[in-house]
Length: 238
Image (cartoon, rainbow, N blue to C red):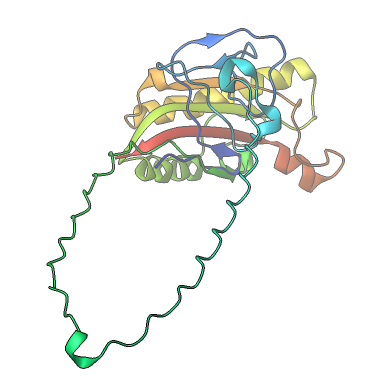
């Protein structure tokens, strides 16, 4: 079973695998790289995010979403057979007892159901960036390392296909500065995960700066929620 984790420095877990392809504007339901290209697995599959709906489908990934066929009309009930006229009751000397023939029931053949491969799934957990970093810093604090260590422990029996770490900031400071800070924080998370055994080639990083707020930047509480790192992971439980 696959999953994604997230908690208030947002940490989410989702799969990237293989090459990405350019396709113009990409809808929100698919995992994309820093060039806004949809990422595909080694088998050519696109990965849905937790926000994907059929309305977000693009032809390169899911083709044309077919509408369910209308249910067939019920077959008409057969007309009852006409009642047969009862013959006159035979006399005792006319009664004939039919020989009872054995009934042989044909055993129904059992077809074994083919084994199915578990499909990847995703879950999300969000962690506050303030729990991971000091203000205006990109060095993980001890409590941040503990949180990430717990995440690694949960992934111990998981076949990880991809991890995406995306840094975010509030709107304090210039846009250019915030972009760099968010990327440094995402890279700090990646470095820690690699140090704990997660393959570096499976981890992607991205900095979004202040562009994707999830709360009101006009309030202190809102700005705290916007300072986060989203970690998306997709993997299959062994």
